[in-house]
Length: 68
Image (cartoon, rainbow, N blue to C red):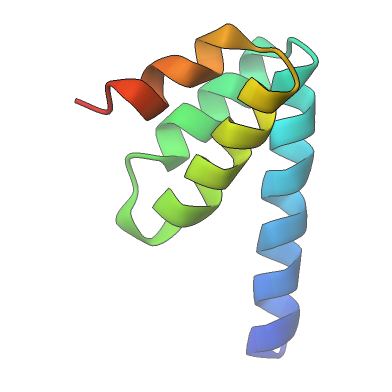
């Protein structure tokens, strides 16, 4: 797989997780939270958490405001 295709696939996966978490999926939120602890995935995870928060999931704000 080409690097650009891989990056695109990762971005798409995190967009889906952000949407799912924004619609109340606890599993989606948990996946984003765990990914936010992995250095190479942090940027994708933070974007997904922001997306979930923007869709109304207040729980998604916690790791953004207090990342520990």
